[in-house]
Length: 331
Image 1 (cartoon, rainbow, N blue to C red):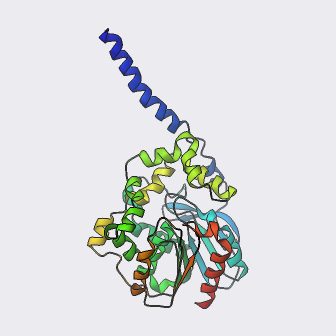
Image 2: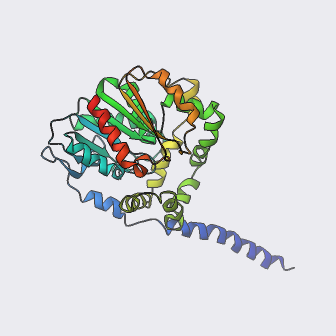
Image 3: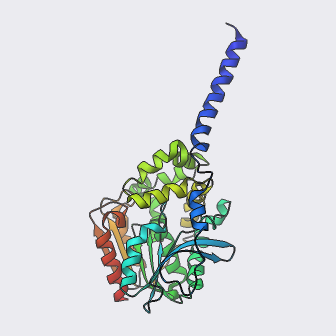
């Protein structure tokens, strides 16, 4: 055997294993940043604006916001999207709540808005995400407001209700139960441990964003296939930009469940009227943990279970929107 040629062959094979994945990843990134450019072309929101899409400077960041009915005289509403979606998921609720007289804001949260995408995991802790909500409310001069969150947006919403109860008319959480109960179950409830095992995978370095972006976002498109066409296009465009997938996945990397549970960080009482909607076919949440949250809600509480999966508003939009607006009106 000619060892020289063997070594060359091994080197070429090694390079091949590097080059092909690199091509699949870097060749799938939207280096032109079409999504960012589209947002950058939007005007800054003005007091006279009442419905549409805008940019909103807040401190060192600039957020992409969708607003509806700001000319109304009814209570304010803030909507928090989940992972890996964006504020476009709330399009129907924005419109229908505005027609009911509410002033409604949905924004692309930290990591999702191109102008609010700091580097470093330390910038994506729940405390920072919570403070973003209050900062947005303050910019719109919402002293009090109804708050709705889905998935990761629900995690943030629960913490807003814990830390800023005096700012809320009501809380609506979709899919994720009280975070004190939820995080404890991730460590201590076997069924929830199994359903939350994906979190550890998302906390690994680089591999999650590689899977999201490589091969022209094939895996990501399959994962989000149940989304309406316009929404899916926005999610793909957002995630395709360099750094976006890392920023959105950093929400998971910043999450230290062991520390949270040890310190009982979120085992705290909710003191505002609460609506919780979940799907009986949701593979993210173990149904057995949901009854535990009632002990931590010292206010009117309503629970709605729908025969569907995790993407509640995508799959049962009319029912979810009706329940949410009814909840607003009652509080």
